[in-house]
Image (cartoon, rainbow, N blue to C red):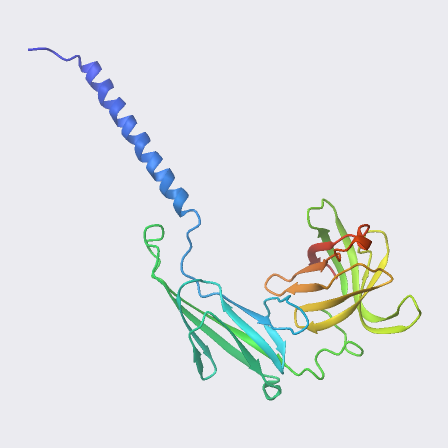
Length: 266
């Protein structure tokens, strides 16, 4: 009977164990890679003003009475149940009009989402989630008057950085009146001081104004070649974005697109 060296036997067992361990680790690594983007079913949704002036929109918690508001669930390919007052809806996205007689009210908006959960990656996900948000309806005749009412969310000093840039710049923003290159008066102006970091002043006519977004109509007083843009406030984290795109024509090759993000400092 052939004798087996116990040292060789132990070494052989350890070798097979290590190989098996490496194989298991590889399978686990592949499993984790496939699950790295997995998330539990969510009932989060967007509330956006629908503008006839522009395709730009921003998630909001307030709007003026007499506006169309679009509601959109973030989760795709699921079953949706919305509750808006006494109305129940099942679409993923839809638009509803809020008339002036709702001014001063706070409307509860609820969404329940049901979806087959990914139990392989998320064993504790039950495929159900619900969220409730409130939409404040403001009187359009006295809540957003460019001429007479202070606008604390828009006016002040903002520390912002150009997209892809290294240094931030402090920009003073306010609403006011101005004159064009012909000396003609303009009202409803969105004015940026130090936008380019050179103590300059650029004035833009506003195309429309809503809660959490002011649209510009592309007419910069004294500076042409700018297309429609916006000044946004993201109410969730109170950050801001300025986007003033360059009009793409052969006459505007020396102009630039302004795209800055940051926060209000005072």
